[in-house]
Image (cartoon, rainbow, N blue to C red; front, side, top):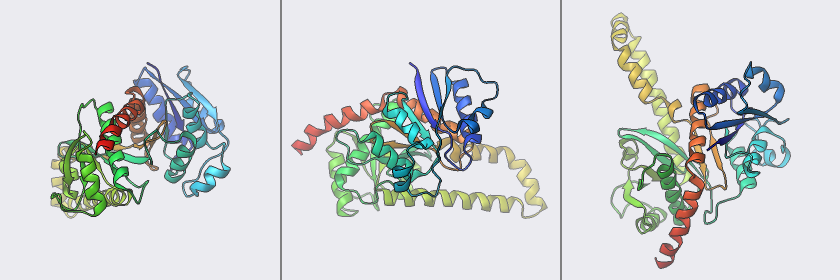
Length: 337
């Protein structure tokens, strides 16, 4: 099965200097993937070198969405931007997935306008993997929906569980809801009602998960509204940066510390590899009638490659069909409830 991935080569902080090498590496390591490099040909083709692989093609797009540009402005005026053209390829059936490191708001607005929502899904959600003591967990929503109803959180749970089942081949991934306590009486009315819906949904619902439970790996999927999810994500990123800075400072404190650093270097490298955020790059925009993956804007080629592989695997595993089937199966349960 050939998987076609449309890549917004102009998005992100580094543009084609990162996206093109990552795409070529994906083609080299995955024989089933074809890539469509979308952007300004004058910027892309020199980076292809002597590449003559027929699985690599270029689609010209004359415009670029700036990282600080208004999503509404990009949607209204930049119809030939690399981001819009890449999403259009998914809409037209010329690509099975799209990946961009560009403006998150613009990507969400364009994707929702062009692709529309899957039947039974009210809002798209941003979902990403986070490292845990037991492997990793998937958290959603990470910022697309600040205010959510209980039904929205139920839909997030269904989409997240479908993603894990499809990509990681788990029959019944566990689903939790982020809350301020493990007891059923904890949380606001929206969270408590959402927990009731999740419990009666047929999902493998494990109940409330507190903040520290995210990184303990207490659930494969953890749902929350976009306000809470984005705060949790940014707080985690900030903590990781602080710990890394503290560690460097301590190892450089004096001569003895520097010598200790040399001895501990293998351990530090293994630790760094386990928590390397680049290995978790690529947030899925779930709920759309097409697969769209958002890479971090500052991603290097190594990190962008992970976003590409995530998109390819979601397309290969039939993620959209799984979500649709689960939503259809959920409707009789909700009517009964």
